[in-house]
Image 1 (cartoon, protein in one colour):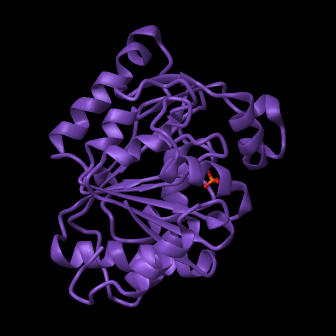
Image 2 (cartoon, protein in one colour; image 1 turned 90 degrees about the vertical axis):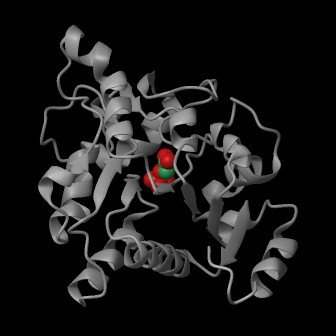
Image 3 (cartoon, protein in one colour; image 1 turned 135 degrees about the vertical axis):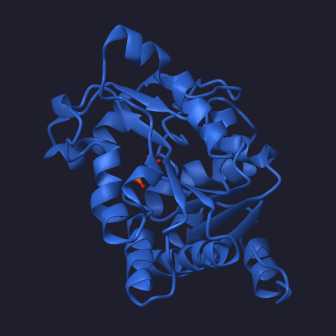
Length: 264
Ligand code: PGA
């Protein structure tokens, strides 16, 4: 894992944006894996700015979502699809048909029981994810792979922990009852199939889960720790999120002396 510690959320977003813009310059038809939540918002904002400045196009790009709530009506403002449309996809030149996410909207037994496997097929069909943006939950989840999720899991339905529902209530006018209990999420093994994983972590509430993910044992109790098994992971954290890292000083030194020819 490459761990990069920067001064604050702005610097984290700037570097994440640079990584994505560089990928699309090399490979315009990349498959981008998008995460929802507060952490990547600044990155999406910067990508929109760079697009408006003519520096990046998404016309040939495919975008796939990491997860989705189950049971919200299609078009609900807090559905993850709608969130990504509003904050990113509709503001750039990504074709509407090139944005995909798990279908948590049709909750008929027939649809919901096959939604996971249908999404796995879609991911195969688009050729897999080139770069997956990830946040980390305060309980150490990636996607919505809550503690106890199998590290071999594929896309399926999960029940959210109370901790996650409380953390997400801020998007639902602080109405805990409005936060869905169920989600569809790429599994841990699905996420590990992406060719490059870019984990962003900002703020003090991420210090403990990030330390567990980077330096703790690999455990289903903190699913972000599974990233340790992936050959190409870049963690970009700000100072506050990095405070519990035992080897923080070493990561800073390593990045400071990174050879110029070595890209992320
Ligand atoms: P956040 O969520 O970016 O809103 O903190 C991260 C996550 O739950 O994965």
